[in-house]
Length: 132
Image 1: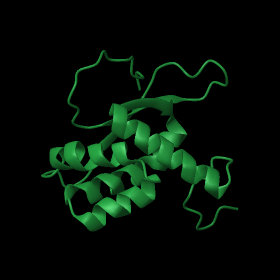
Image 2 (image 1 turned 90 degrees about the horizontal axis):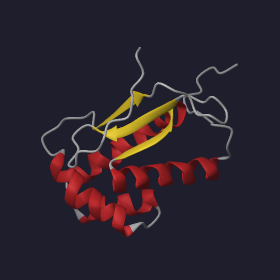
Image 3 (image 1 turned 60 degrees about the horizontal axis):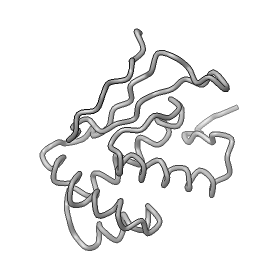
Image 4 (image 1 turned 120 degrees about the vertical axis):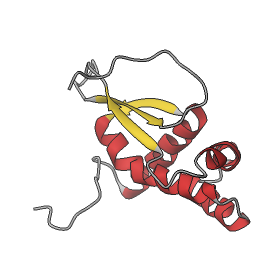
């Protein structure tokens, strides 16, 4: 029974989940759009949203908190605070979106999704979203 269990385990240990969250967040910050499974995107959306909320106020304390959360990845934290933070300065929340893709992954039929920021800087070719 799952009573009062809010976190998704993703069949991983705590350290592995923490590393996965850091890697997904850094990839999303660097590329502003990544393709992953739907479950991973839904599980790590709050983590990324909290990082962007930290970056909206550029203070030394928030910068160091983001460094601690992302595991001392200086380039990702720098982009987070100098590019993404000012971009979402006037937005009260909802910085990311999850778009389901039409076809599942070939190897294991896992549902795929685009995990991206709502306001993006560069235009990329669109992938085919699901026809829900």
